[in-house]
Image 1 (cartoon, rainbow, N blue to C red):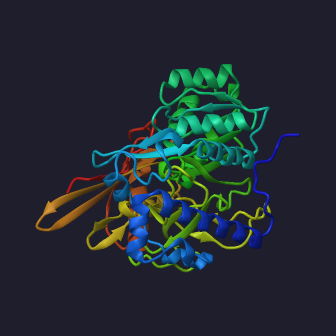
Image 2 (cartoon, rainbow, N blue to C red):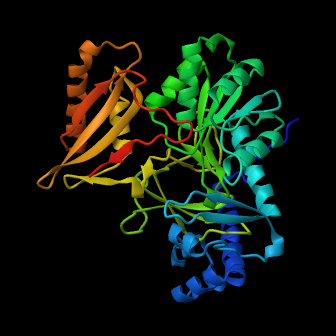
Image 3 (cartoon, one colour):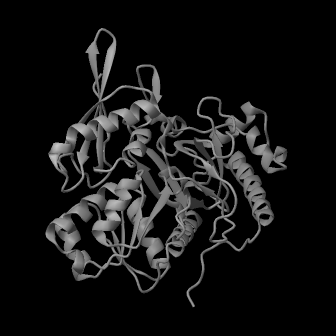
Length: 428
């Protein structure tokens, strides 16, 4: 019988006891092992002995991406160098990479809970998993592969790009599980349709990570690949890497591994907890991480907590899909807007594809112009473009309270990406 990677706890009370023990360990571990954390705790006038309940989490200071960049090359390190076995890095938008270090136990824990993702998605020894994400300094490739092998599935380490190779592997190796970004999945699914090889493709499960994926894009990927289920996997380099959570077969929110990290949903402006069901910023605190632990790390990812137990019965709590990032917000005519709001509106408009761009331009005189470019659905008639544009403009006006210009373009006219798609172009 295949071993399970799910936590041994079965009740919320047991989970809270485990979390408190992990929080107390993390605060003591970082206070004793990290000059950075010790200094921050001293400034906040908090010691390990002060952490007596989970409510005491709020006494701890926040950690940010700036702290990681300022501490380059080994920020947050809380163990001696001889205990480290690996580093991973994310790209640095300011020119300085965020590098995180791992002990052997960190790598083993990461593999364990990544295998839990595959298990929750129903992946096992009978599956062949095509892994189309980057290897190397990035956290994605190695973790997708390690988790795959842990559940006994066959790993096909195809890496990103090279559509000809990807299509050949899908057909020749009879891939059953596809792992990639949403943009890569759409690109590959459209190519499968264009080549007319859909009947030869055996993919039944798609696992997506790294970027948000709207409802329209999800439907299109499943339709073109003929797959049964599409799962959202979450994670980031700072929090081990991908594998920090996934939705179950009910697709009603992301189960996150609350036995490995605490999740707070806070207002990005006040840093106070939001009401249950309200959108806020994810703030995470690790409970077992040795090399580069996180204490109240501001992820900038936006989501909301989902109440109650899932229909699957898991004790693991849930949050909604990642809805965007607090630092992705742009201001247009004094209105705060997230790209995910535009995507949500478009997903309910018949006759458009899943691809869109938002272009911001300055008209002079202090006025800005927003252009929303959308593709008509595959096979749609150009004669309906004016009515389609008017409907989209009306819905955006009604829901976001701004007036925009809408341009409808041919299906496939907007650029596809093998990694993450760029949606917002601010040319002001």
